[in-house]
Image (cartoon, rainbow, N blue to C red; front, side):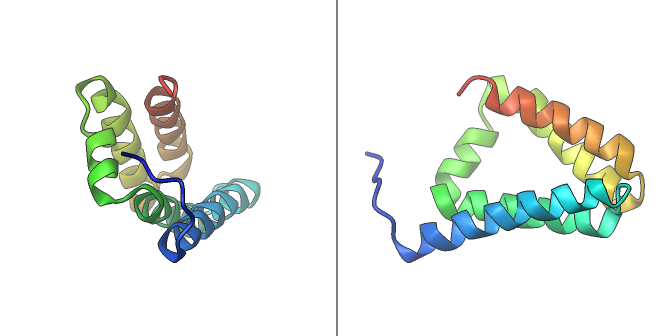
Length: 103
């Protein structure tokens, strides 16, 4: 059963998700700054995890139809951290679209 109540954990999760999107946007605006992009990714993933819960997050990312998107997003995150932010963001965007197109 899904609860739609807004407890403190969900409020913090939504805030972290918003900051993650904001830092990713800033990273793109500042010519693919890898520090801002990596921070945005970390905040986004932790925010989603706090908002919907660890079990639901793992179930969502580990669904067989979401493997392609999960792997693309993860490899893109790795490329951003390693120092290839443009290629990493392309992979992350593709993974994000594949993950959330079924919702």
